[in-house]
Amino acid sequence: MKWQKALLTLLKERKDSSIALAIDTSTRPAHPLLIQNIVKLFGKARPDTLLVQADFKIRDVSPIGTAVIKYFKHGKSSYTEVLEWAKEEKIDALFYITDVTGYFYEELEVNYEVFWLVPDDYLPRVPFGKPIQVA
Image (cartoon, rainbow, N blue to C red; front, side, top):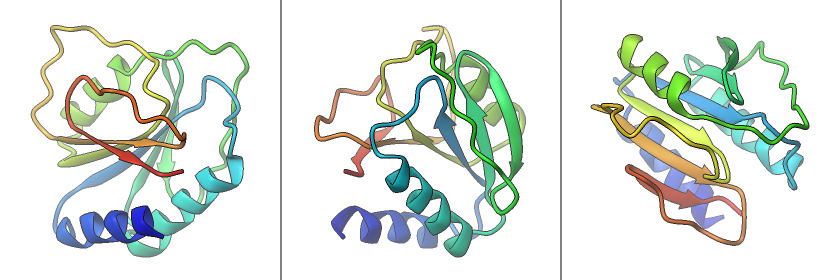
C-alpha cells in the first residue's frame, strides 16, 4: 500500500496541473492486474487524465475512462515520441508505466515532471525524473 499512498499524494499535490499517464505497451506486462489497478487509481483520483499507449510510437491517446489497453509482443520501446508529445501538449506531469528499458534521444529536452512507475521488484536507474516502484 505504500506506493498507492505515494501516488495518491502526488496526484493530489498536482490537482491544478495537467497530467498524463503513459503505458509502455511493447510487451505484455508480468503483472497486468497491477497495471489495470494503476489505471483505475488515476481514473478515480484524476478523471481528466489522458492515457497514452506507446511502444516505439504512440498507438493511442484517449481519456483514461474510455481507453482499452492493447499490448504488443515485439519488445521494442522508445520514450521519445511520448516525451515530445507531453512537451507539445504542455503536460505538467507525466507518469510512465514501464520497465525503463526503452530508449530516447539524448538531446531531448524535458521541462516537466516525469515519474517512472516501475512494476517490477527491481528499480533501475532512470535517465531523469523520479522512479517509483509499484510492485
